[in-house]
Each structure stands twice: as C-alpha cells, then as structure tokens.
Image (cartoon, rainbow, N blue to C red):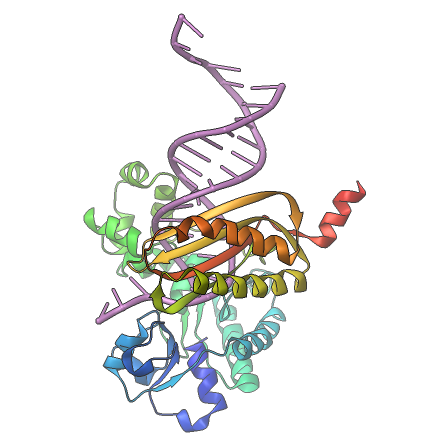
Length: 347
DNA sequence: TCTGGGGTCCTAGGACCC
DNA sequence: TCTGGGGTCCTAGGACCC
C-alpha cells in the first residue's frame, strides 16, 4: 500500500488532502522522542522519511499536520484489504500490515495475464477502499518485492525471469531483502554498492565474509530466490516496551512502568490463549546501550503474578546502578497455546 | 538530527545429559 | 590426568523487517 497510514488518515479526513501529513509520535514542539511512522508525499518533499526522529521532522516541516498513530484503524483496513487479496489465490503471505505476497503460478499462464490480474487487484482495492497500492510482478518473491517498490505510488512493474538480473543490476544493494544498514556498510567496504557489483563478485569471498548468508546474498544478486510463499504459522513471542519522556533512574517510577507493561502483556496473553515459559526484561540507557535479562521458568504459566514477580526480579539487577534509563520492555516467549497444551497433557 | 514498537531469525558460549 | 562426541536447552546480543 502507498504511504499506508497517511493515506488512511487522508481518506478519513479530507481536509488533510494536499497538506504535508506526518503520522507518528507527538512532536511536542520539537521536543518529542518518537519517530515518524509514515508520511505522505507532500511531507517527503521536505525530506521527511519513515523512521526519522520526530524532532527532526518537526525541524524540517513544522507546518505539517502531525497525526498520532491509530493502529486499531490501520489493522481494520489492513484486514479488509487482505481479505480482498486472499480471494485471488490460496498461496498467500501477509508481510506486515500493508504488504503481501501472492503466488499466482496456477492462476495465470504468463506475465501478460499476470499484469491483467494485477490491474484488476489494484482497481478492486481502489474501488472498495479508496486507497492506492503498488504491485510488482516477478518470477519470485525477491524480484516481485523490489519491483513493487520501483514505481511508487500507484505503480505496476513487471519483471520477467529473463530480465530479472538486468533489472536488479543498477539498484543499490540496500534494496535487497535482508540487506540492512550494517550489511550495506560491510558490502560497501568491499567495493560493492550496486546489486550488479554483488552479482559479479567472487562468491567464495562472500561466503568467507558472511558465512551461510554470503551464498544467499550472491544468489539474490542474480535474481534467484526459491523461498516459498506461505502464511505465518504461530506467534512466537508477545512483547511491550515504552520509552520514557525523560531518561530516569527513579526505581519506583521504573517499577511502576514495568507493572503497567506486565498488566498489558497479561491481558494480551490470556486473550490470545497462550501460556509462556520464558520472560525477558529489556532496558535501554540514555546512550542507547541496550541490555536484556531472561529467565526460563520450570513451568508454563499465564498467571499475572508470575509475570509481575519475574519481571520485577529481572529488573532489580538494573536498578542498583544510578544510570539513567530511557526505555524498558518485557517479552514473553516460549509460548504454547492452551489448546496445544491440553493435547499434550492428555498424552 | 537523534533515534518507536511490534516482531523473527541467527550466532556464540555455557550448562548439562548420556 | 588434563579432557571425546553426540545432543538439548538457555542466555545475551545483534541484524533485519514493517
């Protein structure tokens, strides 16, 4: 979906149209601590981008309309769009709230037919939801995803198998799935900046430098990707974290926050009918140094007191120092759904 | 400029078992 | 006397995705 969160806000509030819109944390006159979640193309003209500090966005474009993130609404719209998409294929994979992969191998005979289908999908989403999207059609997930990003907004890019390598070659390596900031830096030091550079590089040196993922990198650069399109199975963890408005070393205040998070996690855990065995506390100091502390219990549980007690215990170690803390978080993992657990105890 | 919050997967080291 | 080889589970940290 194109600038998904911002597009939904514009749809709901027509008065926003034509104005720069930034969805994200409260900028607080430039003192806010969050980030930009999504912004529309008007705001992008000022250099505002997703993931950018909201304080910087404020400096770049303070006359923007700053809108708080309304996940509940976006999740609802997302669900409606995914429902539309699922009718086109049973080989479907949702990717975050606003992207999805569709395997159309058995629906179409060639790329021309795929293009017609893609146009139909775009039209249906626009008719029903008044939102635009960009679609990429390719021989595999990797190429299709990069193609979908090629012509935004409202784009449609078709890349046939025989053109994949040439299509990718001039693009920055960063465009590849799983090449983030760190991997890009590492590749750059090897003199690799484009996907074409990577495709022509010595594969065994890549393996030497990156291990198993070196092979993956090399194949990706050739436009090769054999990964399956499949729905995610079961959730593996549930977590919550909060960044304080100001860094603090006030133990009582921190423990209060931890209790609130515990409460929240408890609600979600029981609502989704899971029990957990491992609990992890996370803290981030003012300088962004981040640490975690985990404990695996001897039993599965979904009791509120187990969450609160273990969380507090794990946090204690971090409260002895006077260092100022910026963020605290809590994660429950090693999950078993209660249904599955009953099956196990039956045996 | 100063960095959210929800996730997944991987790696390395250590404890422990037979 | 000075250390095998197979395995599982746990912890901490980090890269990456949207």
